[in-house]
Every structure is written in structure tokens, then in C-alpha cells.
Image (cartoon, rainbow, N blue to C red; front, top):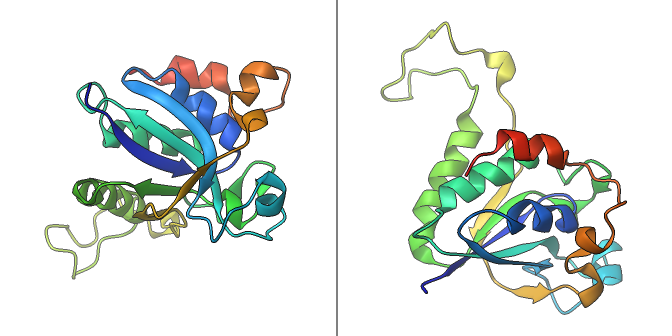
Length: 187
């Protein structure tokens, strides 16, 4: 079976693993450290000693699910307009991001990020194809996009205690409302 990989960050990586685990077409989800500047463990990354983003590696079958749907799901649970974190998970290591493994995925990732960056922004005369003074555009809705989109440089799987964490600790308080998510997200 042909599989591809994409890497996501944003908030608690335990929650991200739980989000993507049951998506049809996703083969596996592994928590870990993305684009780290050196080897590190959870404590070193959480304290900022080693710079890296906490996230997940998603292996998927592109014939069953595409990057766009996976990114839609990511940004349904992670706010790309919030700098460095979600919920109680705060700091640069929790920043939202999409890290692609293949150059062929870059245009689709960038298109999706462009859409997010321009959502709610008022059209200007320089925007070809947009009607200036569109009554449906509200400049007050314009927000700064903080989510990253860049190639993956490195991925280090997190320690065993951080894999499948929410399955082993179902009592853990989460920022994501999984019951609500399952009722709204249809794949």
C-alpha cells in the first residue's frame, strides 16, 4: 500500500494524536518532536532547552484521504491565528504548523495556508479578481496567521509514555471537545 507522511503541530500533541487516530485513510499517528535543533526529550523541549515543535507524524493513504482534508481537520481543532499554543499548552513548542515531507505537497499546503491567511480580509485594488468594497468583507475580521508551513527537517518520536497517552489516561482534561468533534467532522 502506498503511504505518505505529513507532520502537524499545535497545542498538546497527545490531543492531536487522538484527533487523527480514527480518520479513515490514516495508517498511523506518532507523537514526537518536529524540526528540533538537536536531540531532546520531553523535559528538554518543554523547558525550552532544546528548540522543537511538539506534534504528530501522520502516515496516510492518499487514495483514501488527502492533505487538504487532514489540514481541514487540524484547523478545526487548532486555531492558526493564536501565537504559540492552544488552551493550556503555551509556548513556542506548541505553535501550530504543517510540515510537509514531499516537495510535491508544498503547493497544496501553501494554497491552504494562503486561504487561512486571507480569510476575512477585505479585498484591495491589488487583489486580482476580487471586487473592491465587497459588502461581505469585513476588515475587522482580518487576523494574523501564526501557523507555520514549511518542509520537515527532522522528526524524533516522543518517548513511549507519550504515545497513545489519552487512551491510557482517559481522565485527562483536554482542550479539544472530542464528543463535539466527532459529531461535526465527517470523513
